Image (cartoon, rainbow, N blue to C red):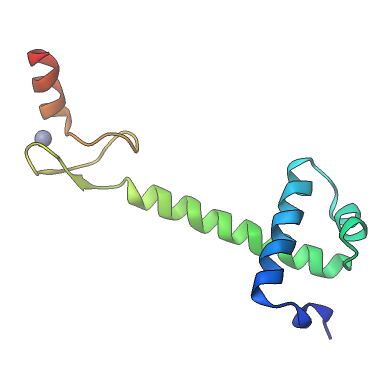
Length: 98
Ligand SMILES: [Zn+2]
C-alpha cells in the first residue's frame, strides 16, 4: 500500500532532486515530507535509494581509477588520482625533459 506507485519515473527524479536540495540544507526527513506534501515513508524510501546510488557512484569512480594504460609507454599502472595519465616512470622522464 504505497501512493508512490502513481509517480512516473520522471516524477520520481524531480522528487529526488527536490529532496536532495532540502537534504543538503540538513532538513530532517519529517520536514522534507511536510514541505513536499509527501508521506514520511516515501521520503525515507527515496533517501535510502539516493544513498545507495551515491555509494554505487563512489564505487564506480574508485574502480575507474584502478588501472589504466600509460599514455606514453602503454604499460598499465595505478594512478594516484583521476587526472594522472602517465606512469611514474614516464612522468619523471618528461619532467626531466621539461
Ligand atoms: Zn609510462
